[in-house]
Structure formats: structure tokens, C-alpha cells
Image (cartoon, rainbow, N blue to C red):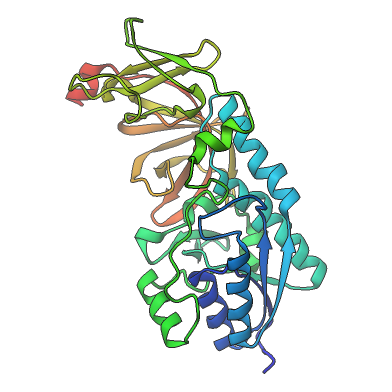
Length: 366
């Protein structure tokens, strides 16, 4: 049956969320065409980018009676996601490859292909919503399932993209998604969720992946006074705030990575209080609409708690200073910092340098 509500290109990863997204659009009368993006050609056990995932998506499309295609964006994925991921680790940053995949592949390359094929709408299975900001502009809103919300990794979407996007499962929970998939008899109903980084294999993990591509260098661990307290095999595997895997011996002190001097090969460890700062610079900020000063909530990892503060935009550079209402742990350089007002995304960028550290006394006493 031909849809009457418009043509929609649906990104079908082979998972349950995108399967149900496609099914809901078919049910609602859209003319749906499914497409699976072939991105990573290496070993993967994350539940995406494998031959079986392409097959799952194709078979779900058959169940729904819609056409299905495979777009090979492997070269673009390597150029815009994998290579920068490796390079960032090589210079001591903590990258967010899912954000870069969304920015360069799913919501750029795919949109360009949709344009070439004449589709005016694109849909995905992300747990997020598109909401009216009340002033005629649109925003990414949090998904109904707070535990599965993916608005954080979609913060870069602009007004033109938001106007064409559909997130059919954003208004329901993951349990409801699986219930719908079961009712419809979709083969992906019980399929496990994919992991965040599709190109990192569980055997060997990041260390093997990076070690095959760049030299991994040992580093010295020192305390706040500069005294050596241990060593790590690879400074490229260390991130700010890390506590586990430091091999600091048998004492019962909780010590965290509080500074990384990548050039010198030195990692400083200290208490959690040593990580606290009163403000944080954010670089390369992209706004949903116009730059916005004032109170905000900020999320600094994909599943992290929100932090309250205020945005100050540096008009000369475009950088943003976030002044925290209470001292917060410093964000690793390269991680995304996303600004919210209520449940809607204002914009976001990547963590840069720190403005003002907080003394242990002031952090403890508030």
C-alpha cells in the first residue's frame, strides 16, 4: 500500500528501535523506504555494522513490505569518526565518536543522500523528541524513556535538519518499543542493544584497537607533590577522573586522575576534590538556534547526571564559559558538554580548558 503522508527515508540499523520506528511510520500512512548504513568494515561485536545487522534490517523491511537499501559510507566513517578518534587519543583527549558519527554521517551524509533521492523527510530510531520552543524554532527534546534518552548525542542538529526529522519512538519507553516489536512479530524484538562504540571489539578493547594504529607510551604516576607513586602502560588509555586500572598499590586511598601531561608522559593523581572546578570552558559550540546566555542545565557524558549553572557566551571567540552553581568535576578535554533548558537542548560543544579550580576547603564547605 502506498503511503499518503509523504516519503520518509528510515535509517534501519538492524536493531529493535529503528525497526519499530519504521513500523510506526508505515502504520501512520507514510511511504517508507528503509536504508542500512554500512560503516565499519572491521571486526565488531557491538550489535551494529555487522553482516547480520544488515540482514536483520532487510528482513524487517520485508516484514513491513517496504523497500530496503544499503548505503556504504565506510570511507566517510573512517575519515570523520575512526581516524579522529585515534588522533584524539594520541594527543591526550577523550573523544566522543558517537557524536561525530551523528554529525558527519547520519545527519549529514545520509541527509545528502536523501536529498539526491528526493526524500523530504528522514527518520531514525533515536530515543529523542522534536519539540516546539514556543518562538517558532525547534529543539531536540529528551526522549520519554529517561534511561535511554539520546538527546545528548544529537545536540548538533540545526533548524533545517530538525524540520525534516522524525523520531517515531522518542515518545515511548524502551519496554514499549519491545512490546510493539513483539506484537508485530518483528525479528528484532528481543535483540540486545548495541554498544556505544561499534568499532571497538570486546576482545582487547581500546588498547588493542589503538595499539594497532598508534604507538602507546608508558607514563609515570605522581601525586600532587610530584612524587612518583606508580606507572601505567599507556598514557593514551588514561582519562581525567579515572580511578580504576591505575595500579596504585594496596593503600585504601581513593585516588583519581586529576591531570595529564601528555607531552611529558606524566599523570597526576589526587583526591576527588582536586577535580572540582567552579567553571568550564566549552569550545566549538553549535546552537540549535541562536546563542543563548543565562541559566542552564548541562550534561557532560552520554548517561551522566545534569549539572546546573549559567552560560556566558564570549562573542569574540564563540567559546562558552559555564559557571557552575556548585563546584563540579572537571570535564575531560574532547568530551561533549550539552546545554539544556528544561528538557530541550540549547546546543553543545566540546570541553576545553578550565577557568577556576576550587580549593579543597571551599569545595568541602560549599
